Amino acid sequence: MIEDKNPKRTPLSELGEFKLIEHLTEHFEITQKSTVKGIGDDAAVLNFDKKQIVVTTDLLVEGVHFDLSYMPLKHLGYKSIMVNLSDVYAMNAKATQVTVSLAVSNRFPLEALEELYAGITTAAKHYNIDVVGGDTTSSNSGLIISVTAIGEVKKEDAVLRSGAQPNDLVVVSGDLGGAYMGLQVLEREKEVFKVNPNSQPDLTMYSYIIERQLKPEARKDIIELLEKLQVKPTSMIDISDGLSSEVIHLCKQSKVGVDIYENKIPLDPQVITTCEEFNIDSTTIALNGGEDYELLMTISQNDYEKIKGNPNLTVIGYITEAERGMHLVTRAEEKIPIIAKGWNALKD
Ligand SMILES: [Mg+2]
Image (cartoon, rainbow, N blue to C red; front, side):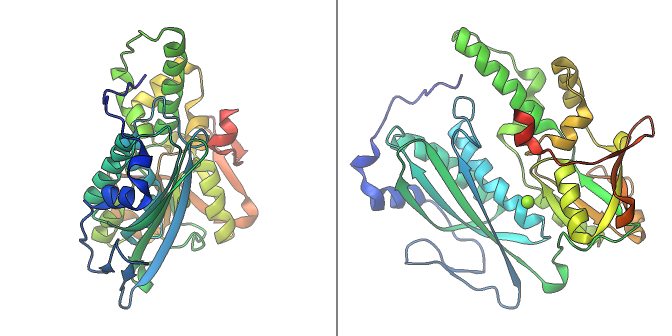
């Protein structure tokens, strides 16, 4: 589907590891005050003064987490940073640095890695983070990307998964299910392409959900919005595996129950129409489809007036005592238990 329009293919062996790293990382600029020394020594040196530091890491494996037949390398580079920053923001922290490590097979020429790094560079610029280290090595098959993200947060501002209290409101940013439905469209087009390589699919009607899959954005803006509104969530988590499994994580760690209202779950119209086309229930997709990288949080009822009517934040339910359990209240006002499936299980 995505043709390599760049005919130049420089084998990685032509550069060797050190030249390769130098070549790929020479454009990174240092903008964070906390970065004392970035790439170029045995280790990066960071100084956070009195702030607390959050560290998170994610591994992306070709064939497991991404498929290069429809995932452009530039997008993959961008997304590999986003999935990590999303975890930093889920702590109510500010992301400051990342390290990027690659294992790459010899089927990738230098130009492919340049594309990947172009995406990483764009992400670093947009999100104002420094790339301060990493490693590059060879792999016998495929591409593996490991990103570690570092962030800072004032001690009193850090938000854990464990702070939700009965009667707190359950709030979600953005809308859900788009990334999973985008993936369904891309998988379908891949099958069509296999049969007829000359097919030129018109994907405009799916543009939003495909972008949600290929170019997700971590919700830095939500962390800034919460600060502006002077709302500190009582608990928070990012939605990488689907609403239901993230709700369960919050409730288990906070030792509370929850009622989520089906009719409050925010869905984009494109998710609804695509679900109809694929004959899938849109609530199931919001609950179990993954990779939306929205933030799920609980806030005190006292803060309701501050977030009321904000188009970025939707109240979808409230926290209950643990004994009441975790439930979805359907449109028919039936209560059904929330169980974790996650997007991997859904794929089968
Ligand atoms: Mg997470």
